[in-house]
Image (cartoon, rainbow, N blue to C red; front, side):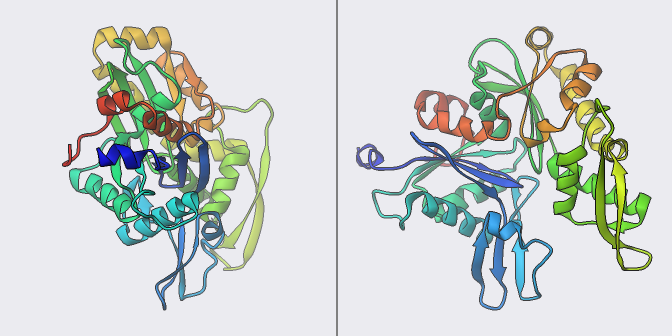
Length: 346
């Protein structure tokens, strides 16, 4: 009774707690925060210096006593204390004040499909320590499908591939549940690492994560582009230790990305092979839906379609569909009860 009463005063939140970015959806207002999942800390005083975009700018540029930390690795909390502080910062930023009895929100959080019970508990505990009154966990593939307004509760197959920063979630959904699925530690960050390794091996140049991401966005692709492109690559020459720059082509960057692209495609085919025939028939008729920031890689939809012989559609605003899905669930308790992951409190 009191929970319902106080709930009227709450500004409930949906959170896409991503390896690369954290998005926060505020009930009735939409996505109000979209910032990198990075925290800068002073190791001498244990003081949080910056969170989000400002902290990301410090990555690779800090002196010895300052560390820019990414508290999530492959969608899993690797540093509980820093994750808690990051969540607290974002939640307080939403409410502009410390939590009181009537301002503790319900929070719906999207998480990878393959988290262990201990890892799920860590997410719940971090959110509650940051001020949440009640925490609901929803797998990211389901949240993405709901955010894309796909018919997840119907007796028909919805296949979605959500390529985030740390994980790629491949799932076939029907009747409000996940029928077959695969969670890969191969996604946006892996694309960046592919570029770093390729540039090091082929050109003997060491580059950082942020430059690799910029190269991926500028000329990265999974298939040939309409017109050839080049980009300047600047880094440290591993032979001389001095700065060096050269031009890399889109073909070279595509070659760098091919290992992870092929891995994602092979796992999509594996899921199709293990999906019940009736649902596979639906997928061939309705197509596969691509979401997440990694889904924006040029030509990826066409590469998947060519390999699987089924149509592939990029959802609207793929970067935010998980967060939008958590927001939809805030307003639909019946659907939330049907699709949320069970926890010890239920």
